Structure formats: structure tokens, C-alpha cells
Image (cartoon, rainbow, N blue to C red):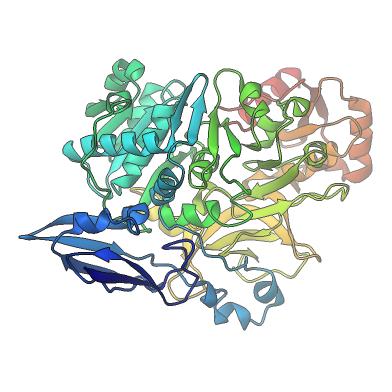
Length: 598
């Protein structure tokens, strides 16, 4: 019997007990038919090795837990094993010298998040890791239904095999028009294993005409749906339609091996509303996702044994934080039904927009250890309320920068909430109109750089060129994204969000930031949330919650804090704010209400 050896130079564990970052060590195992000696490096090398039996290699006890790193395929009379490394900017190269030596203090000392190495480079690879490590652990629960990690990967392999037979290849787009469910998770993992991108939409909430537009714009050839929605799906797309459940709950084996997928592959295409009202498909890669989901603080401390609620619309980027952030770290996803509170009440981690979180009863969420919000401005009172019981994070970042690219851990009793600092391997620049760095304390537009920057808009190179620019600070092929968010660096080295460039309006000839007016109103006694809108060229109006908020006191507070032209002429109180299907404040609805009272 011969002894083979794997030599690995890897950023993460090839065999968790044996490998350390950037070290050379050996892992020995019995091999009767060949000697194996290869290396992985962090420079993005892909090797092709040929052996008498690649399948036998994959079944070795030392290799089997990591077989998802390999791809066996036919190569004449022999078998070929594809070994794919992660093209990743090594942590030791972050930040680059161009940042460290930049003459502007904000760029040099504040713009870069810390260096960190994600444990995995592919989303489905991380899920497969837990399927081997804890096969019988419940990966997700939806009412009385549940699925283990082993069953999730098994069913995903079966569905991936069907998709492959239907002609789906790497870099294809697959429509995922579903509702919250366990089959939804199976479909996500199956599509990722093929190296394809899923295009998520809630089939019950989105008008059929818009679903058809998204399906066509993304270039989808196949649509995945639930059995109950098959008829509706046929009215949306004249294409191959597969019911996800047909690949589930079958005990027979699956002779299918995941493809070798590069980390720069698109994982999903998420459609935003767009400033013109037409949807824009943002291509989010595996590298983008693993960088935020598998490094702190974006990982939110999720680990096996922890439950994470799934409250948000699948077409909203923050749902990927819930879903993939849980499954990539061995947690249990609690998928909501009609009762959102019931799911949150059993969760250790809650991820939501501030508007959704404001609807939850904190006292019923006794298990909650960590709460993270993003997607819209958060009132300091909401952070203080939840921060009394658990760790509270406030994040910021558009879909184009992968869920969030800044995070702030709220300190109880601080009386101050901001959007924090850049997340690992990412940058934020506060720039003026000429794209020059602003001084600390000076307001400018925030641009985002680093590994958070997505791959652009699907089928729209002109818009991609307009919003994604070469990064002059990181250089060397990096891109930065124009967020259209206003911000400034504080003297403490954190970022304050000061609204959107498109939230700046002119009232009586003066420029006013609507979010800044709302923040002042939220500081008034008894006010939990405030939204300010422009009614006409001379008039602002605000909506406050709860319905019992003292309007006179709120107006007096605004008059003390704001110039006369920025004080809202009308104040309306509601018990809660109306929300869009994605869980954000429905400003169109509010504007209609305000115009009726104006």
C-alpha cells in the first residue's frame, strides 16, 4: 500500500484540525492506486490533474468532506480532476500601498475596512461543508415542515441534475419565481451548484407583466416555481418550467457532481426599482457574498445551534443575508408564514429593515441575541429600544455593494447612531463633485470600493459604465460604485449618513435634505419614526408614528432645530408606516395621504 499526500497552502482549513493560513503542511491518507502531490495557492491558480480513478479519490475519508472543491469529468480513458482555487486578494495585500501612502488623511486612515479571509469562496461550498459536518442538523424550518442539511444538499443535487438535463449551463440565468418555502432553498442551492445565477421574485406579489419583463431582461431560459404556481408561471414565461418539489423527498442516490465554479461567477441577479421606475438587474457574485456573509461583523456571529428568522421578500437583497448567511454558517433558518412575529419570536438573530423591526414586539423575542437593520434610515430610538436586550447593528449600502458595505454596532446609552465603518476588504470614500476626497466633517457623496462592488447591471453596459468607475485609490483594476448617498466622516472615524442626493429638494429656493428633517423630528419626545416629503415648491410635510405622538411638541422641536423653510407645514400621525413588498416605507402611499390633508 502506498501513501499519498496532499500539500495545501490555503487561506482556510482543508482539514480543519491540520491546516493553518499560509502554511505548508501535509495530510496523509491511504491510496492504493496513485501518489498525489499538489498545491493550492492564494494567487488564483487552477490545476488539472489526471488519475486512474478520480471517484476513488473523492471517496477517501480524508477528502470526502471536501469533495465539493473538486470536479470529476471524463477525459478519454482516464478521469480528470479539476482543482479550482480562489482568485482572492490576499489579506496581506490589504490595504494596498496606494491607500497606505495616500496624501489625504481620510483616504489613508479612514477609508479602508480591515483585512479578513472568508472561510469559503463559494456559497454552495459553504453549505456543502455543513452537510458533511452536521448532516442531520435542521437547516430550515417552515411551520411544521423542516429539512436537514444532508437532505437540502441531496435535493439540490437532484434538481441541479434536472436543470443540467434541461440545458442550463454555467453563467446562465434561472428564474426563481416562488414564495417563502423550503423548496425555495433547494432551488437556490441547485442553481448555484451549476454555476448559474438565480433571479428571485415573489410570484404572488409582483404583477405578471413585471415578472415577464424581469424574466426576459435577465435572459432566463428556465423558470423554477412551486407546484401550486405552475399555471401562473406559464402565463408569465413561455419557457421551460420546472416544479421544484418534483426533485424533493426522494431517497434514491444522485450520481451528480457539482461543477467547478469560479468565485467571480454571478450567484444571483437582483432587480432594483431603478430611478426611472424600470427595474435594473444587479449581478452579485459568490465572491461578493462570501466576503460579507463569512467575515465579521457581517456574519453576525451565526453558528450551529442558532436560529435566524427569514422575514423579508426574496427579491430584496437583505433576504440573502438571512438565507445564505444562515446556511453558510450552519445555523437554522426559520421561514415566516403569515405571522411574522411568530418566526421572530423563536430566533436568535433577526435581520430586518427598520420599518419591519418596528412592527415586532421586542418582549416576545426573548431569544434574540443579535439584531441587524439596513435598507433605510434607522431611528436612534429604535436602536436604543432593541439595544437594551441584544447586540444591535445598523448597516448601510445599496444592492450594488452587496447587502451592506458599512456597519455600526450601537452602544447602549451612547445616544448616537451612525452607519459605522467599512466592512472587511471594502472601502468607502466621501468625495466632492470633482471626485476629490472631502475633509473630515465635510459632507460629500459616498463611493464604495473593494470586494463589495458587484459585477454591474445585467444587459445594461451604459448604466454600468455610468455608476461603476475605475477606483483611483485602490488602482490595479479595482472598481468603485457611486452610491448617491450623502455622508461625512466624524472626528471619531465613523460615517454619518445624511440622506440621498435624490432626497435633496429645493424649498423656497433653499436646498433641503429630507432625511435630515426626519431625523430632527425623530428626536422629539414621543416620536418613533418620521418620514418627510415635498408637497410643492414651498411646502414640506411629515408623517410621524405612533398615532399618539404630540404634533405640537414635534413641530416646536423642529422649529427650534431647523431653519424656517425646512420646518414641515403639515404633520400627520399614523400608528405605523405603510410598507412596500420589500419592507421599506411606501413613500408614494404617504404622499397621497399628505396631499389629501394638504
